[in-house]
Length: 518
Image 1: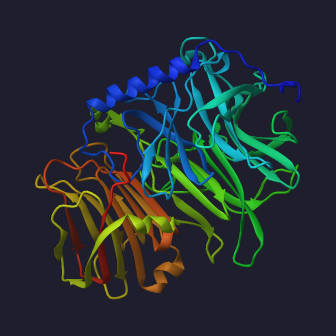
Image 2: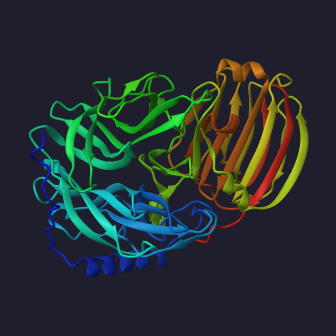
Image 3: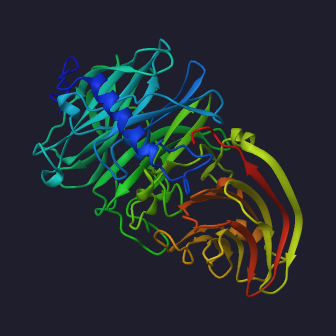
């Protein structure tokens, strides 16, 4: 199957790219002018206006951190995709940059889809992305027609780029429409690319290509096929090496599985982003050594992308609002990214994703509540009005008897709140939105290992922004990311115990700075 990779990139302009970019900027500005900030994040990346989804092109280049993202500039629901862009010198204070890509070539006329950035052997950067067309030429009723594209930046600041065109066509007889989201890396003296595919028999796969020059790519094999026949597509694939505690190299394969069915606490979202740990040798298939595990157990996490900077594997995810009602659609913007997290392997051999150390620089001040004990069904207000805070808390499980205990965040006068709690009956940390007045509800639960339960302690870092919560359990061994659309009025945070007592060894609350995108 090598006849679908052209000798040179195929460049077929159909629109003026500069004009399309200018039109998109005007669209975002129009949306931003009527933006409601009630849930607009203070310290998470979001577009000034319009809809966003997957993080794209993540990199650190010439002294700047860059985050690109899928952007629909003309509305607050998914539409023709562009690439939005923000940059930072420190991952703390961010600057809006011009929109990078708009659909202007025949092969991407209905959307510049997700992709990655990679720095070549000369220290120069190259973008890879998916060009999207509707197969019938006008809507999704006939499925997708997707191909892989490349582009080169025009300057070191990555404020504009020149498209080079299509480098991998789609063998439509072997693919059921879905064929997207390239990830590129180098092992040895060979460059490799993988992306997600729905095979002709609708199995979720990742294909492997190789190249010596990063332009001409040859198909090698199916890198991985998901064992679940219900999974028909693996979106936003990721693939990278990582060292375990003994210095052994493992490979982590990540993907967002479309079609997985809910089972107990697993796969409760519309589509579910997760990973497997295993081994890989160049030219071979990935050999998993673990089952499929979720990157994040929350309601709203999808399409993560990681990149490596000086040995650090850093990942951003998209907080995905898949389920109606989605009240921020009415506010001129929709969608945000998670905080950046660093991926490591813990002593138990499983993935840990903790906020990057730089996030501590967002703390404006600290209120140290010390140790707290609540009696049966006790409650204590931790903050009267908290829009954007981080809470560090250690619960003494051994000295607590409560069936559920934790934090009610975004607690408003109408009785609404989101509950971040330890549930002793199931041995899990939960984010429960049953009391929220806005948005969809339900709860999500992150498991604790037998060793974590036996330790008698539970460490939580809870990041509360205006419309969301991220909960890091025991240093990032599990995470839950969920939207939380607060009602009007002051947003209190309450420490509570249900059906028993609660002993908290320590609790600190940090007010968080703005990252500059408001």
